Length: 71
Image (cartoon, rainbow, N blue to C red; front, side, top):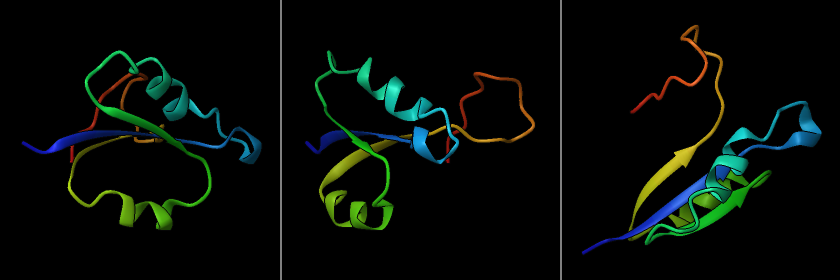
């Protein structure tokens, strides 16, 4: 069984609201590793190996606020 990794993405210092990081913090009670990323997105790629991964970030998509997009 693959391990789960939840990654909260965002950086309040770059004009974002860091919504992905805040959402990930609220999921620490799940059976998954939870981490926050604010700068090194490329460095994250090595970390994803062997995990079922959920990335959480805020996006401008034209959809109503709170819409969940799955890719």
